[in-house]
Image (cartoon, rainbow, N blue to C red; front, top):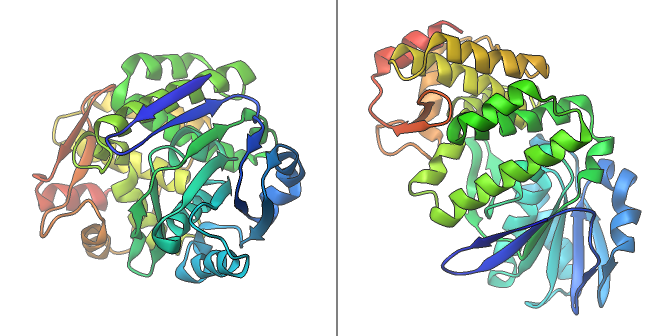
Length: 343
């Protein structure tokens, strides 16, 4: 099936099906990592036709989402003399997609790129919407740009080689979508396991349609799109504290959702029963839901490095029941500290 995103500046399609043939009249650079290329690069190259194709393989993992790796990609582009009609292809998970998109956004002031996501997390969330960037010592994705892809190709076949933890990390993002936007979808997730080919295809379709709608309404995250950061405000601190090496992004988001739920329960937005239902669903996919905070004040102060914080206020995304969400910067520090002490 095809889902379209229409924005003021551009429009593009998201294809959810077996990978189609891609024909380009330009130079193409495929950005990938050793894990993905080892499993799937021949399959992609068999579907790709261009004037010239080269491949740059970068280290695998969130800890390599850095300026140094970005320079590896850009150096490859310059070495192969790409011009403004050239195209980058992001072939991997969210880390590859974010770095490739950012490289495309700044190479010769902006060239096209195509997303071919190979992890569940990137298929249901990261590949759609044009957020690109890298991490630094201060936090996650603090350097980046909004740069929409030329198209997105989601082939569920790539999930057949996905490790269990990576699959669970993607499920966390699917649950996030349901909690924020559809109580009906959440109920469906309670009744239908996603380790079933038919069910995962339906969950991908539902998540992509939801993300596409949100991005079409709010491309630059000035309002509704911020709701997609449910679990991320806490999760990004966890990733930073653990040097992006202990948890996968979706795992940190899962823990962050539980923390956000505790805060939502405390201020009366979510019932304890609803919070337990969300946690139980995460637990059923062996997604981490607990975390030991060593220093509560340090953890709290890390919030202010988040892109969503403004001046001395922290923006929290909290579930308003299941199927709705509240975006607020009016939470008292004492309430947040009390919740953090529980971890």
